[in-house]
Image 1 (cartoon, helix red, strand yellow):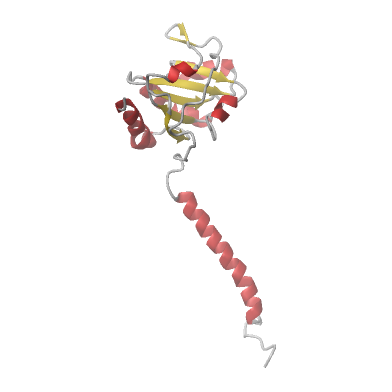
Image 2 (tube, one colour):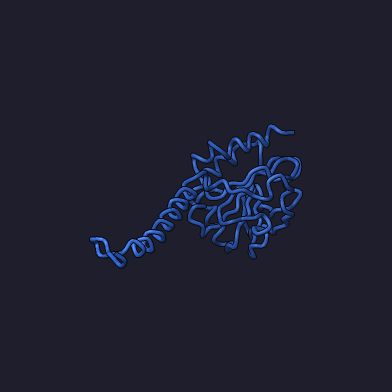
Amino acid sequence: MSGETLPSGKSPARRLIVLVPLAAFMLLALLFLFRLFAGDPSHLPSALIGRAAPIADLPPIANLLRDGQPVPGLRPADFIGKVTLVNVWASWCVPCHDEAPLLLKLAADKRFTVAGINYKDQPDNARRFLGRYGNPFAASGADQSGRTAIEWGVYGVPETFVVGRDGKIAYKLVGPISEDNLQKVLLPAIEKAVASR
């Protein structure tokens, strides 16, 4: 008989109308979860890997001292002939507070230089931040407008780049430096850059 209904009171066509969108939603949710937990979120591809570091001529953070000497800003010449770890940071960035001790530890290694790009920060706040945690930066430029960070392809603060002796970006770490990613990815990238001539 046409129009016959199942015991639940719903026709097969009506049940299908409800189940198809539900199944589609479940598939999309599974795909989303798979992509969310697949891979290392701190390792996003960068179009700048293997290319020259963007020309950055940033002024120094006003009145910033290290060992009693003014800390210079960032210049393009800073990247030629030596391995440089460039960290994009800000005093208002919560994860930057967490990674600060690790940057100090990295700065103790004299095989490379640690430089900073201070992103959209007030000089007083930047100086207080470095006064609290210590200053790992041999040079740190003030990127007040954020334009330099855009040229570096920064997604958000903090980010860290390894620049080789040839002035080319060898590696990019998105997010804060942690003990885990320091050992697993950042130090090996630095070692590789230091070893290459």
